[in-house]
Image 1 (cartoon, rainbow, N blue to C red):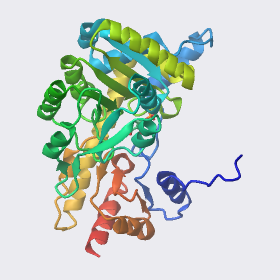
Image 2: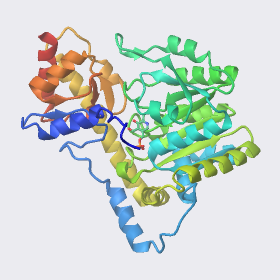
Image 3: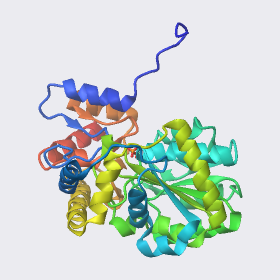
Image 4: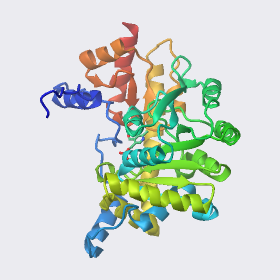
Length: 398
Ligand code: PLP
């Protein structure tokens, strides 16, 4: 049965990681893969996670099945984190939250659920968007279209063009929005723009679908969910997927959530049973460990404080690196304005280089990044930033 199968080409980011690993150049820099790294280049386990794991090891008495919706404690705590406690209470039974295998699992579960509600639904995604949105949503059967988002010339959001395009969506259509720290461009909607999107959704009747993969890495936990909370407050329906991969550093533990807000508690009850059956038909139940860790942290004042403190350190490191990179690039005497890097949020920004220039950075300078020139800001540190800026300048001047 497999004789006619052709191998697929390797994932470009995995290829970059492998090339970086075997590059003997001591000055090599990896700006490709999207994980947070500290000043030493490590993706460490967070302090609160270690402490919560120790407690779990001590206190856990069973490994029996939980449920397709995962841990109820996790779901309520994460709903608080994403929506805020007051709004969670206000929404009452109109909201249902599911623990999912990471943000990816949440995106796919949502897509499979939507496919049941309305097969082949249209979903508009930003151009550009995170590459994995396409298979996660499209392979479930949703029809993907795009709306203009990032202007590579002006390094800003093409907001008017975006609004024009999403105003073509109507009832039964979805619009995917990045809650904060847009991947790949780092350019986020401001509060007035979120307000305008909320009004448009209200008027046109489409259902916004927010991917919140980086809550806490942009401006702060509450600020980063401004858009989610505004839309949840004002619209009859909303889908939100969140990830604990980055803000809890739980990448491999596959911890995330799917929240559906419906316009009545009856509709939310029906959604709960449908999503349960959908999860049961894919992976049955989500993995427990990461969710138990998160629930433990969010329920404990001390662990929660320490987690927020470390997350603040992560966010400040990223934001300081953004400023420092602009300073270093400005020292190179280039006729280019890089200040957009400082204004953008989260781990990613486009440097604004051509694929050819990216290849020169890789081949001649051992600086690894993807063809689009998206960089992971957290791959920069105080000992490589000068070399990075000098190398970018050399490539731009050549
Ligand atoms: N959404 C976006 C935009 C992402 O960048 C990522 C991870 O890189 C995810 C969702 C899902 O992450 P995970 O499945 O690791 O939680």
